[in-house]
Amino acid sequence: MKKAIIIGAGPAGLTAAYQLLKETDIHPIIIEESEFIGGISRTAEYKGNRMDLGGHRFFSKNEQVNDIWKELMPLQGAPAKDDLMLGREKPLTEGGPDPEQTDEVSLIRTRVSRIFFLRKFFDYPISMKPETFINMGFVRTMKAGFGYLYSCVVKRKENSLEDFYINRFGKPLYSMFFEDYTEKLWGVHPSKIAPDWGAQRVKELSLGKVIADFLRHLFNPNYKTDSTSLIEQFMYPKKGPGQLWEKMASEIEKMGGEIYFGQKATAVLTENGQISGITCTKVTNGGSAEEKLTDEQTTYTGDYYFSTMPVKDLVLSMGDTVPAKVHDIAKDLPYRDFITVGLLVNKLLIKNLTKMKTVNNIVPDCWIYIQERDVRIGRLQIFNNWSPYMPAHNEDTVWMGLEYFCSEGDDMWNMSSEDFIKFAISELVKIDIVKEEDVLDATHIRVKKAYPAYFGTYKQFDQVESYLSSFDNLFCLGRNGQHRYNNMDHSMLTAIEAVNAIKAGSTDKTAIWNVNTEKEYHEEKEA
Image (cartoon, rainbow, N blue to C red; front, side, top):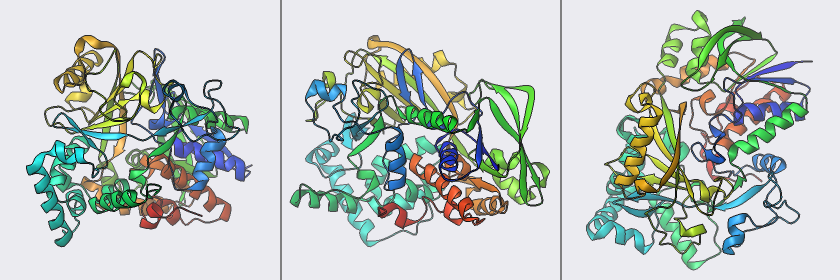
C-alpha cells in the first residue's frame, strides 16, 4: 500500500488525509508539531470557556467544502440556547440535530462585524446607513464622498496595498478605516505591502459594491449579495472551529489513518527530484513559545508528501541542496505572529444600540475591528455571539478575545503572561469598553507564524514556488504551506486539488497553487 506523509494537522493537512482515505487506497500519516488538532483554527479552552483563535466563519462558495463540513457537523434542526431565550428565528434543517441535546452540530449564526473608531461603531464592511454619516460627522463625510468620486475618475497603478484600497474607497476612507488597522496587522505601512493581500481578503468589495448592494436591498428586500465579505449568516460548530477538525481527525483514525503529535519536521530529505523522507524531532509544548526539542528523532517515509508547514521552515529543512537564491528568498519570508488574551467580565461598558436582540443586551458583534490610534489592540472577539456554548456561563458573563498582531521577539511577544494581561485590560479600560473592576479572569495565548506576510522577499516568491513544484511527489497546501492568506475553505481546496492530481496521475501543481488567486474563484459559485 502506498503511503502519504502529511506535515500538519490543520484544515489542509486533515482534509488531505480525509480525502485520501475516502477516494484512494493511499495510507495517510499525519505528523503534527503541537499537541492540538486544527492548527490556527483550533479551539482553545480555559476553565470551561472556549476560544476561537482569530475567528473562523464557516462559509464557502464551494459546495464540496460545504458538503464536507455538513457531513462532519450537520446543521441544526432546532434552535440554539440563545435563540430560544430571545425568540430569534433561524433557518433550521429538517431532521437536523438539536444543539440543546447533542454537541455534534453546526449552528447558523448572524455575521456582525463593526469598526470601533472615534469611540463609536461603524459597520464593517462600510454601509450606507445614516449612522455611518452621523458618526463620521459632516466634514469627514464630505471628504469621504469627494475622495471616493476622485478615486472613480483617477485610478492609481496598483503597486501596493495602499493603492488597492484607495482605488476602491478613496483616500479619506482609506485613511480612516484601513491605513492604521493594516499597519497594526502587518507591522509595516500599506504602501510597502503587495496588493495581493487585498485581492485575496477584500476581494471584490469596494465602496461602489457597497452602494450597489444598498440600492438593490432598497428596491428588493429579498436580494442576496454574492460578495464573500458581505455574507450575513454562516455555519459555526457548537463548540468552536476546533470541534469540527477534531471530528475530522477522529474519522481519519477510524478509517485507518495515523496521527502523531509532538513531531517537529526538522529535516526534509531529497533524492533525484523527489522527497524521500521527513525526519522529525520529538518536542514538548510543540508550536508554543515554550517549545523544547528532545534527542528523539523519527524518519517517516512514503510515496507522497504534503506540507502545510511554513514555506520558510520547509525550504530551510531541505539543507544545502536548495539553490542559494531560493534559500535566501525563503529565509527572509516575513510572518506576523499573534497574541490573544481571553478575558472574562461581568459586563461591558459599550451599549447595544442596534435592533438586534442579544442575551443581557450585550453588543451583537462577533468581532470588532479596533481602529483607535491610541491603543495597540487590533480586534476584539465576543465569543458569546459566535456560539452561546463557547462561554462556560453565557447568561451572566461576557467572554472575549483581545487580539494583538506582533513579531516573535518584539516587546509584546516577550512580555510575561501576567504583564501582557494587565496591559490588554488597561487598553480596553482606556477606550471605555470595560471597567477594570468588572474583570473576572483572563488567560494568554501566543501563536507563531499566524499570518504569512506580503512584503520583503515575498515579491520573489514565484522562484520558491517553482522550486518546490519541481518535486513531483511534494504538495504544498494551506495558509503557511503556500505563504498565502488562505481561509479555511481555501486551505481545504488546496488539499482537495492535490488529491485530485494524485488520482489523475498528474504532477502539475498549477491548480493547487491557483486556489484563492483567480478572480473567477471569488465571484462564481460553482454549480
